[in-house]
Image 1 (cartoon, helix red, strand yellow):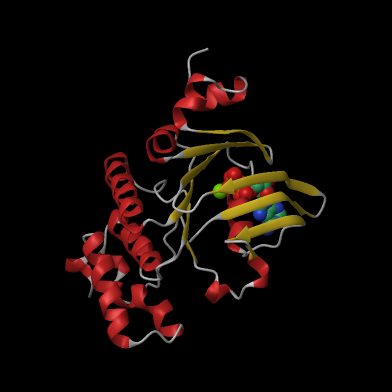
Image 2: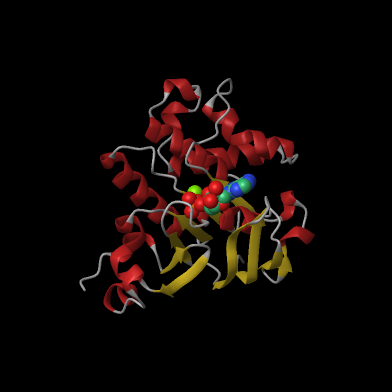
Length: 238
Ligand code: ADP
Ligand code: MG
């Protein structure tokens, strides 16, 4: 389970309207990519979906339940940020297990989940290291691993690769695609990189100025962009 329904979601900060009426349904197990220029509201929309930010109006439903009616620990959502947000004083193992310990997960279950996630993400050699002793790519894999051990039904990624160099971006992108196939979880992934969007997405949502310009499969957007904005953003020929 991990379906998502967004109904006419609006979000304002003071007098600034950031989300101007977003409607979207994401199917269980789908990989949906949000693209759009800087400042168009991608991160705000993710935060509203996660329930980290209240919508000004409209609803976010996860498996039919309003997200803000469910306590954060029971939402089944894990978010991965661009900046990793790891604890510098904790080992990789403890960074990955902290959330589970706080949720009172039994120790043997924590050990099992950390072993599975670190195997999937090739992190076994680094479990006793601290974040400062890792490369940027390894740190981002730890941040992804910390999400994986929670076994969420919905993953939210906010530009997870934008601090990595080009070669690492490709590798980490392939790992995320592989993770999606293995976990059968729903994933929503924000990027401003057209290649990431085209290669990862089941469907792409093109955002601009707090509204959805178009939703479609990558090749649908490429071949039939709804307007000039989508065409220029997806890189389709005029
Ligand atoms: P994106 O992720 O697409 O770059 P954001 O969702 O971060 O865009 O931001 C969209 C707009 O909302 C920006 O103009 C930003 O300045 C504004 N914004 C985001 N968060 C806040 C906040 N907490 N308070 C005021 N304005 C905000
Ligand atoms: Mg953002």
